Length: 401
Image (cartoon, rainbow, N blue to C red; front, side):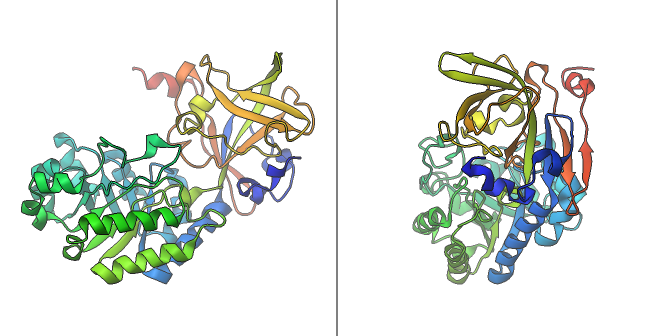
């Protein structure tokens, strides 16, 4: 077994063989860990209790609502990216806050959105001017997303909202040029979201930029949303620095601080189980085709890109037998990555990718007519329960009726 056997993504398996821990489930399938979700929730709730900040669940990363009751005791509400997520949060977590941000709102959806959302965050001064008065009259708390122009991303440019020419957030120059002061009375809060899977040093740097660019506006606000991308539940995360940032904002500007992590709620709390369909060799490369597709079942593997942890596997060349693992679609780049194993792979062998609770079930697709994997949960007592099953009709119904 490789050194990655003890990767945090697999600690809840407690060293047990996959077949023993997870049973003989049909593959590919997702398995979510109730214990992992609760553990993450407890960490985030302690942060909230210690500092007075409020924690939101960003549903764009995790929206398996059957498990919202597990997280409910630890959060004040949800963050939505539009109408459907807002409705989901309102319906599945009744009585909790619903915060909404969209790069642009559609006029015909605004009426419905105001039924579900409590906090409406605008992406531009134009949209604030157009829709703000109606939302304010409906009793909503209004915010504006700002762009502090402080890039802290390395290697993940697709997730950098502070890149030159970004469409996300209002810069200070735009605020000045487009008459932000005239709309100030509509605003209750400011929102920035610039991080992606980062530690609190990046937040500390960003907060300094926020103060430099928008510090004069913050004392006039009721709340400040630090956005998401905080890897708070990752082992080794610098919690004390995060707490310091929260307290600084609260004490300096008198604002209520919100955080809206997505990944942190479900980090290392799920797997994607897959089996080896075929084995071959091309020159120096051993190839294995799996029944799970990176392109369809974990799109971030290609978009981000990244190499997900694999149970019992090592880096290429670390163990005796190295393989390039690919999916079954026609996309040449449908590749999970290169991994090594202590023994040759066999057809039908069960593999498990880790950290598959986030940006998978809410982002997968049916390219090539690929079936969607069923979704299971492993309860804290070890019992496996099916949350959702998919078949041909789920593929067909997306395309017509």
